[in-house]
Image (cartoon, rainbow, N blue to C red; front, side):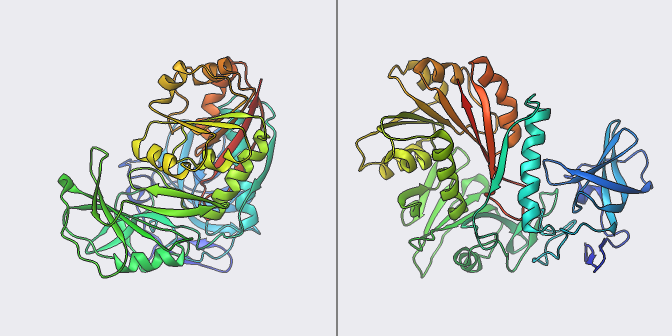
Length: 443
């Protein structure tokens, strides 16, 4: 595809003809109704998804790799009745928050792992609070939601201890912007040095490989490699350094190939076991901040009985256990609940239930005071808020990896007479538009 563009002192100029709508915009093979429309645009906001936006007449225009406050020249590439997407051609008046990206693979048509390397750190955290507010207003129906300042750890670079890579020819890479095609890379500025070293050791692809999930422990130095292959074929592997390797099968089962299928990590003074087959935290300092935020907003303390719904590997279960009298974890993933049981095995005030949270909660009767819910992308399961209310939870901390999921579930929380109090974004993924939200509800 060639060089996607060049960063200039004044702005960003994309070389003519170097990109296509298919390559840039989520793989959509779309012929716009006005393919040659080039216009100047003043950008006024930021959208969930990381794009800046402006308006032409009544149509909202989304522009990636741009910032609010900038005046830009763009070309429409995807046009709909009320909105359109445009390709950035030139920044005519740059934002004071525009900076040079740290990575040579960043930009249109290049690596899709980061979306905001061209934005100064202080602006990134502000934009995440804006996005959270917008989602709660537009999708959640809240008029003036109380949004606290975004909380961020001190490490905006070299923070990732887990990353999924994909075959890019005979080596590994990361997927291009809006595409399933992988771009080969030699280095990545958001990888923790130990993860980057593991990537170099495993930077090879072969026919039949679908993806490679690499993870390292900051506290122990342990390494875990999870392979996904076509037809679940396990490759013959020989290694000459300590590492665990597993095959993650298409049915969700984990097949150990070398070593144990887990590693240990210390977060906020607690030691967790994290296994393949379940989601694992990738930013350890920010995860510690997330645990602290949940504990603070929930005001959890001695005498409280807490329920952790969608508990995963016990991040909040273990993180809060020493501050409360009882904590009950509910999780469906068998690998995650086994990790939680192992990590919390030394505690006598932790009770774990394995199974789908809606079914488990329906059967529980012991009273609780507080609750934490960390639902998947599809949101809260059937009558979870009502059952939390029945059990006596008067405050609920809702932890969302997607603010739209939280916004859609506000109606469910309100149906169980829970009132939205406040929310805060935790910057779990600097240089990207991703963040985790903690929202407090009370009744």
